[in-house]
Length: 407
Ligand SMILES: *Cc1c(COP(=O)(O)O)cnc(C)c1O
Image (tube, rainbow, N blue to C red; front, side, top):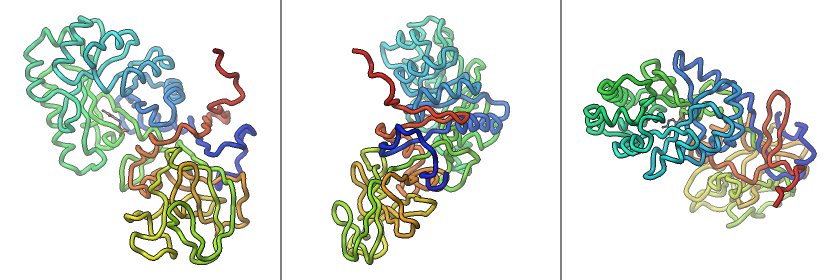
């Protein structure tokens, strides 16, 4: 789909400014691949933050069909949404149990990741052994989870343990994306020592990156997020996952710039010579990163090679007809401008530029924006027209042909 514009899209999308395509077959393939990586461990899919920005419902539906029976969400609200498409699955809530909320969990058959002695006690009191929950140990990330002293107390209080009906013990690695980091071994050691004090329970320590650390880390269950969505969890190396997301922006106009003319707010870019510039209908209001704009480096003279936003990062790139085109000037709310001088023939209004995809990987966009694929995905805007593809079929959301909801 090089260049994007050669792809045949539903006619209803001709006016869409930004088009986000989610390849559900690639998502299912990545789930299968995680299963191979994790050997004997079960794969639980982490679908928090609206399925890492891709749409919780479509993601859960696809993974259920692919055989996934375990999910992690951030909160009860996401848990309820997931429940509608995964009626039989185990659904764990990472935020744990807030005071007084146990009935909400029971109602949707959600499992809190209990993260303090109070939560264990509250869950036990509210459910008296009738509803399973996970126990979350804090082995070093210091966000959620029981401490060493808590684990000791719990081990010495069988009544607490029995009433809470624990079905999983888990912890979360702080540095799994740096395989050689000593924190990995340290957290693993604590996790093993602490869980040895408790009754035997299935155990989960690894996220996507942790699944590359071997069987001592994958244990009984891997909680896989980013890899399912086609992104490497590592800053400095690839991972074998298939890309899931393609983002395209509509070309609104192409114009010639004379030497000396400027582009965008702040006039941060000045053409050093004649240039051809395309305006694309995607901006920071769509979650595209303003930081990917470019202009002269701070203090530099205007013009010349884009030297990055004031403050230093080089600008980002988009791909038009297979040609890499630098973003010039600032990214504004609904639009950005790119230099298409090298594209022949010049693109025309209505064409598409690829912003993320086979020609310009998610990881590269993240790096140029000074962030991670995680943030690029969860920032994907609500304004994009979304296409979900599977087995050659395309589903459009929102579907503008459907009737408005009845009052
Ligand atoms: C988000 C999260 C995961 C998934 O991490 P990835 O790096 O996306 O695989 C696993 N466990 C916990 C506790 C998380 O918060």
